[in-house]
Image 1 (tube, helix red, strand yellow):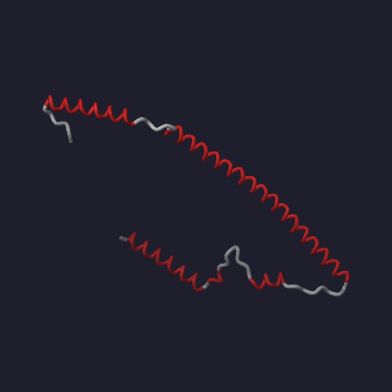
Image 2: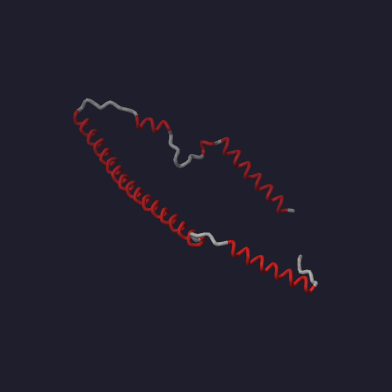
Length: 143
C-alpha cells in the first residue's frame, strides 16, 4: 500500500514540475533557439565609414569570410555528391534484392502448374480403400 502512495506522490511531483516549467518557459532555452534581437543585429546593414583604410580592412574581412563560406560550400558539395552516389548504390542493391526474391519465389513455386487431375484420382482411390476397410471391420474411425 505504501508503494502506491509513493507512486502517487512521485507522479504528483512530476506534474507540479511540468506546471512550473509551463509558467516559466524562459528559464529553459532549447539548443537550436536563438535570441532574435541578436540575429537581427548581425544581419543589419551598416554604412562603411568614409575613411579608406577602414574600408579596406572591412573589405578584407568580408573577403576572408566569403572565402570561408565558399570553402564550406565546396566541402558540402563533395559530401552531397558522395551521398548521391551512395544512394544510387543502395538503389541498385535494393533492385538486386528484389530480383533475387522474385527468382527465389519463382524457383519455389515453379513455372508450370502441377497437374491436379493425378492428385485428385489418387485421393479418390485412397478414400475408397479406407471406406472399404471401415465397412468390413464395422469400426467407425471418423471424429
